[in-house]
Length: 417
Image: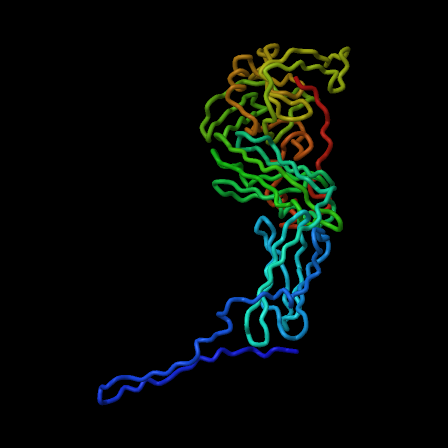
């Protein structure tokens, strides 16, 4: 039975003003308005496919609301989970059926408010509540780095507990990983692999910024029988913009803070065959003392290039063993020639100063080296060596990731001194 639109009638009258000035007459109608009445309990009219009693609904199945018989129709349905997120749905034009078009969250509590209208136009209301079943094997996310203060070059990382390969599934995951900064900047995620994403802005982070990262993935359907799990929020801040630029051909390092030069240091970098990588690197950490041995990177102790040295004030910039550190054995070459095995060496005094003024997340850039370029993702944080247009293509929310675009080549292990 179809229902024609109901028209609310408004009674009107003409106000007659008597020329004798004796009064005015008016007319009125009934104040009865079915739409203003208190909604009746529509429990006897509403049927839904939710669970009975303490049973839990299958989050993989859509929610459906219908009305019994022809005496009423649905006028509105809202379904909200415990965190205030609405479930998308569609109401039939004749008001006989509503069904969800969005996926139910797993392990969630839902409140469903169903509004109806009977043949007389009187409003009805029924409120339903139910829980959806939780999943035991979910995709969890872990954000990095640890909470704290970092330099303006520090990328955000997200590591998933399960690989995600499908394009649609990646889009769902990426949409749920939220990065908010104060002040606001343009940025996006880049899928480094099936389980790892990196986030960076177009330019370096602003100085003294606050960056909050959280996941909305918990309970969200990612693919068939695959749902999102929990993820601990992350908050980091940035300090000053500290950049160390090493000119490998000029044998000097220039250190800047917020754009102003604060020191110029004579250095030595990698000799031929062990040349220091060109490009932007991000400080990974600092160690006051490191024992560096050539054998740990495949150089025999009997080789002329073998070494076993105590190294102080070591600032690490790649996982394969590139540091900025004190090298008192090469002071005579610092500022003049490159004699190291790939690291940037300087005097003990200069290394101590550098160690005190550089922090995790700060920028170390090498130019004019005859070495290879820093790879983007497999040897530390080379994220800033990816052009912004290419970086955007690493997001499944912004563009398709084309085959052969940017490859994380395996880093060649190099000696550290």
